Figure 1 (cartoon, rainbow, N blue to C red):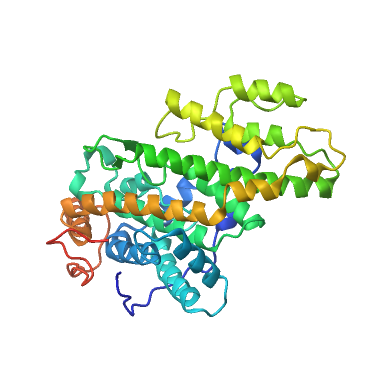
Figure 2: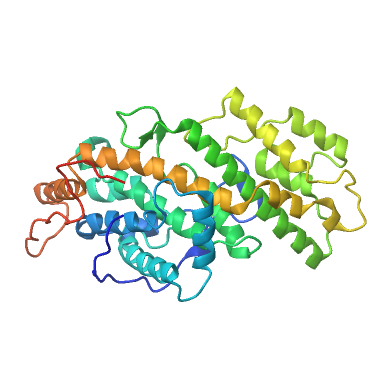
Length: 382
């Protein structure tokens, strides 16, 4: 466990979580146009601040990821989730301190984004990303920051709330692109070898997203006195071309059997044949909580939510998020160490900026000193 340092950093004025793009069920389409804040993010980035805060961003992200130790059991996660609900508890206070420090560093990387986009940071610094050497690239640190963003959001989520529904939608939309570029090609800066684990994580995330969306849409249909159509909702979340296709249980069953599942690892990877079957099997498992009568007198009778949430329990999902995040963290810290450590990466960027005169510097900045928590002479141990 990394010890906390008494550093003070500025916190952002407000959280922009409400700006998360991709509202509504149509967001699950493979051709969905997402609202982009790229120009605003680029405008707000200052290369010198990126250099100066990169080690602190790494450090504050790791503190969040260390809130739950490696190999934490399901019972440990349950206990922590309960303690975080208690205002003023030790873990709640620590979580708040970690989050404030992390947010204070995140604002230098595009304050209107939940997840930092590595290509924007690289573009801002180097102008021509194709010419950047691997040693100079800050991508691994940024992916670690995005892991911390995902973990801190999941830690405070509670089923059945609008904020949780929006949070899961945002995480689903950004998974796995916010954490990697591709699978298996280790000559690339953002590659990962976790294709099977990432698919499992994507499937669990999409499942929890479906449960929250079904819950939210049922309540909305009651408020607006409209028809609640759980099969249609499920189809829009997991399948392509699912807007207006079926009206009966048997027709939906046929659609789910023959329809084409969305690529849940897009744009990083397409579904393999095995993954397509696993997605369809998961949809079948979810639909086992749908009573056969789609014309039930009460819309609430169309989904057995108690059975659904018991079958896919929230603490188990949170534990899986932590397990996957820890595995990805190990990959990323190994790459950082191969490049000399986070301070060495920041110094390489600093050298580039000075040598290429890519920004106006009124006075020379002192060379970055290695953080006492970051040892470049040996791999980071988690």
